[in-house]
Length: 388
Image 1 (cartoon, rainbow, N blue to C red):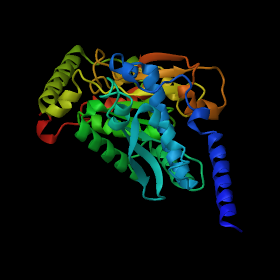
Image 2: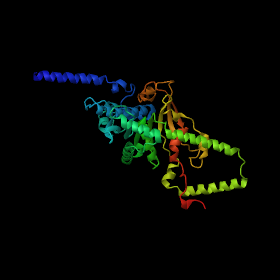
Image 3: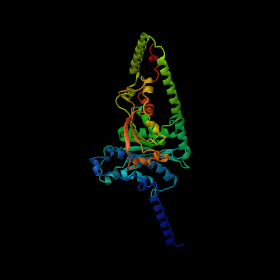
Image 4: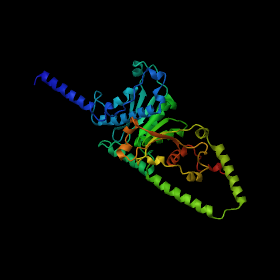
């Protein structure tokens, strides 16, 4: 075969691969957002990042890029035909670091940072207001041969314990977010995740919030179903029933009631003096308020929309944040009627053009349970502080 003939075959093969990539269902121009423009000089006057719809769309695209980074790795794509970069380049961000699961070498997260050079080339001399300096994006479960085992293992971990702290991904993601916060400041950093990734994002965001570090958090279809939650719910119902029974029993004397009240005030006073300044700051006016994006047809996350159980909250009223300072999250609810699970749980819906969301500052039962540990007093006093 002549050298020229071989070159023609290579060229033809490259053209075929390029055509296949151009029509790939996960290509940005095929399944990406339609009406979202790239940043330009106008953002210096009126930043698109101040628009909640724009921010939600771009952050969802960054998470999609993490899914595709792992797919690119599994399918041995090169820089020339990789799918993932197209999902962050239009927004003037660059890939700074990938988070690798040491158990299977899969990519489960990525750090994307504002690309000053790319922005400057389009006459954008500085980052628009509201645009994060860096974003930590975490993907969810990827049902592929190379990733299904470890992804499902973490899914089952959450299902059993409602916690992901035992996973190697938790520590890696927490260290990455803390490093970004230390480098750029918590107000210039954002963490986001979808499905299992949203579970990790919620728990590492909460971990930093306990230290008084508040990072903007976006959670798409976060998991809300676990065996631990089910058992806890049964316990709460039993406790509520016992409380009703007690209320029907003959009450104690007024003197004893007054004595109990005085004792409670004494304990509260001791609590107030014992709380460290960093915890006192968390319980103050500033709050960590994550953004949750929930579809009512998605049984994995729909429990976040359950109404608050005010009666259950009153049982522990000494230990939770006061009513005038409620535990809450920004809840964005998508209700399109009955949908198939894969559609309702998918990430693509969150950059859809016809998206109509109901927005609320919610303190649902599940949100209160997830966040109240940030603003609660310790369950018991140290022995030296207990009243005698």
